Length: 566
Ligand code: GLC
Ligand code: CA
Image 1 (cartoon, protein in one colour):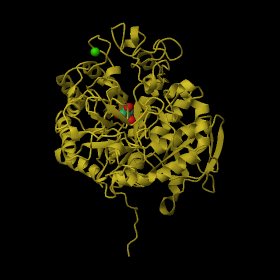
Image 2 (cartoon, protein in one colour):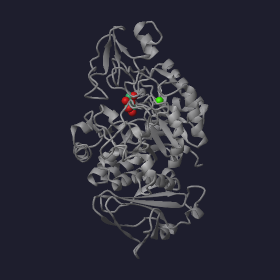
Image 3 (cartoon, protein in one colour):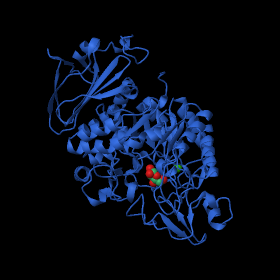
Image 4 (cartoon, protein in one colour):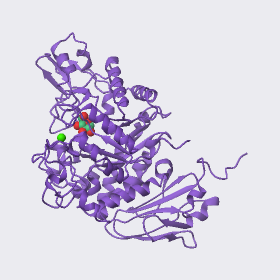
């Protein structure tokens, strides 16, 4: 296969325009500000941006409540500014994915207003109604503790409407052909304005059957193929990155057996077990999650992440595992959310310990998939637990130690900049970290640079190498006659591990030499072919197997070098 599916080996960076940089001084980030920071992002080495919702919205769920799919919220700028931004990104070789939030609209969307007002309006059927209160109205809430039901009564319509999320986010009737056509139209619109695809919000809910009589929603997977077909026709390299927190045995339904559905999905299974491994220094459940999510079509890719803009959902862990993660990373009630997760940022969860942050990020960059970095994590930003729900981890980017962290000239940003304390902008900011070679920011820049030279992670096949020590994860990737090997020690204590690289036949000899890509300590196997490493607390190693002549040995196709015939 040709290796130019850009998303298979991208470095994705997720940000929201409202908290990145405010150029016009009204306290809200805007596209002009973001555009001025593209050189920073280019320097960091990221290759794609995932932009959170920026369309017209009453902003009751940070823009995930859209009131006009075809316009930029005036707070962030104009459509003209948006196109300037996608153009400027393209000039730097950076692709832009945008959030596509079509499971629901805002209740202030003209479609919903029309639907409420007039039972004969064509928009009535674009939403999901019931004359009587459905029996299951108090089940299936996505935000338990905050959201009270999934059906609410509308006085004007004199009927109940369905909302999987907050009551101000009425669900679209996504089975309706006209709604589907509109979704395609929205995609086509933004594609035309320079985006390379979409992070599709809440995919399992978009494709689920909805209605007062639906006891057990069923997924209509064909819709996924329809989205893909449309996109590929309009623009061959455009993709969908699905937000679908589903169990591994349904992954292939989302990717499609022939790779004909979603191009990418976030790997929630690995995410949750990765945090367990970090909390417990026990990699066994993580290894299981890696193996369970291994099957996928060659053209599909996982999006890997540490923290995102939502809570860290721990719902897939066992009760015991979950309690271990809560105890380690979110022991106080105020750190937890929706009875299932932790709402903090990564750095405070890991006590701001750079060794642990590097370990976590080294994993993010070496587990199978495309890494997704959350803005601010590259400088170890903290959270503000005085803000409600998930807002605590959505504070403005900290650029410098100037007023408001250099985010705005306004004295009152919409969300406060974190100031004072160990994570305040006075200490944690991009400008200071630029000056220190060992800072998190410069470390991230270097690791991204190296990751780009290790395409094996995105394209290759992985093997977990047994070590008999659950605190240490050793993985090898094979691709086109090249191999890399990564070692991660999750423990707070140094560990000694022994393993063999596991190459056989003609290649066995290469496995005797491991060249460290990040430091000077290389490893030679002993006479029995085994490597013995002492790896410090939270240590990590990136090795090339065999030597640095790998590019001279790389093959054009991924077949065994001496394939036997007949
Ligand atoms: C997704 C988003 C979340 C949002 C919700 C409703 O889960 O990640 O931030 O609140 O959808 O659109
Ligand atoms: Ca502004």
